Length: 195
Figure 1 (cartoon, rainbow, N blue to C red):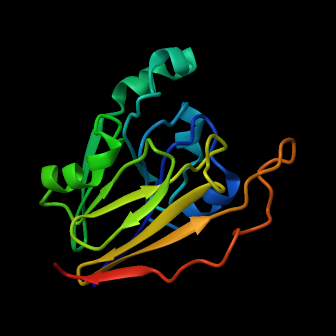
Figure 2: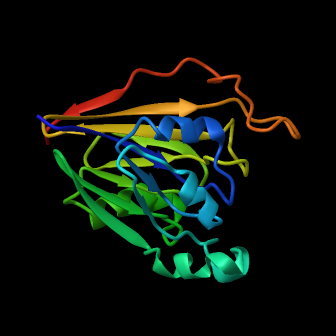
Figure 3: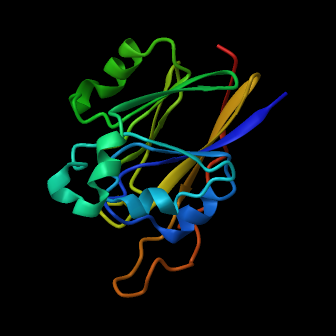
């Protein structure tokens, strides 16, 4: 039975933490939930297959991107639907939905999905109590990381999906990305069987 590992990142705002980039290299696919910041961020996402999917965020506009990157920006959609073993993944930024009802609305608008991935808030969230799951990998760069840069790794097979959360210590100014490793031990992966 095929299994696939998907790196979930968002809210890089022009900088991808190198520790997260290293995790992406061990995945089959990478998805970016918007507020990318420039083409270099997408180029730094190097999953095994080379497949990277991204959506635009509210800050992914020409005035905030280098002009040399505008042709790429013009090709990035606001939404991606991705068929994975065991279900569909929906990727969008989420900025057009009010925070108080965002998860409820994402579920109502995407009942066919197994998981909905979004960004915008920079808050790491794994809402897996009901389907579809609603996941926000947090901020994978330097801007408003809310406790440190973070991402998620989704493992999908036709029988089971699980998500592992990765959060790193914040970088100190002038010290690069650092290599101090995870800020705290990781919780066990969240799992669910087929719906």
